[in-house]
Image 1 (cartoon, rainbow, N blue to C red):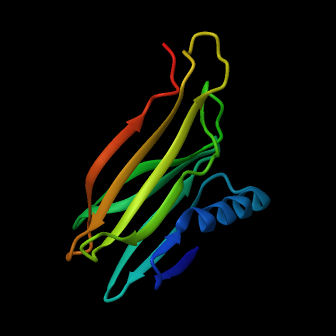
Image 2 (cartoon, rainbow, N blue to C red):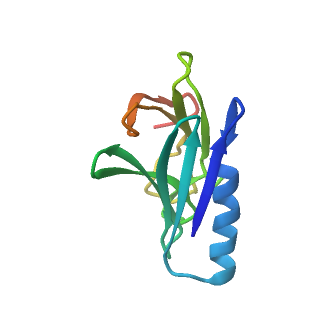
Length: 150
């Protein structure tokens, strides 16, 4: 499936589209599915791919060089002791302070009570900038572990 997403305003929530696509995947009961998002920013276009597995893990593939994509887990409802809550991370397409296209991914992670897994409640945030060549560079990655316990 292909979706064209044009960023005209200050901010666009790609996670809203992904959530709708996840629901469609569930309805159609497909074991593995890819959605290609053609993201248009002003004079640039980049293809981002979202794939979801049968277990309920979703990966966002973003271009990081001419022939290489980086896989970032943005969806998780497979309860292996750790899950995302909500299951779909927040993916925001926006413009950086210098006007260049930017993407921020925010994930809330928590444990679900498995006896051998420590209590975890944290937020991970990653920031990317789209270069003139149409590739994403990660400019920062951070965790807020204030709610975690050993």
